Amino acid sequence: MSTFALVVELELKPGQKDAFLARARTHRETVLAQEAGCERFDLLTPEEAGDTVFLYEVYADQTALDAHFETPYMKQYLEDTGPMVASRVRRLCTLANG
Image (cartoon, rainbow, N blue to C red):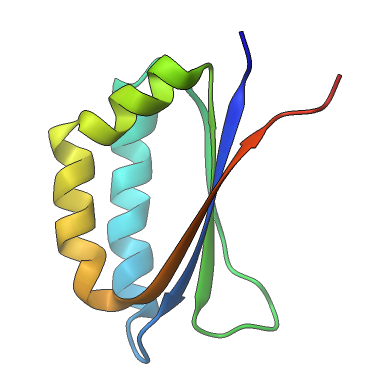
């Protein structure tokens, strides 16, 4: 079984970063508390990109990742943050640590 990382790059609309991060932190806490298959969930803010945020999430397997997207709190998070986001790029990666 492979471990998957989901890397999401979000370009936020101007002035939305604080509100987005507050909502994303709450979502992160919920995911880590509710989903045994989520092994890591980090919010990253690059120094050089003011309105960009990265999410780095590690899931035990594809089943855990699929289940994550079906939770009611994930759907609510996307609804809540959608108006704050100018663009979103998701990359699914297989951990290759060896």
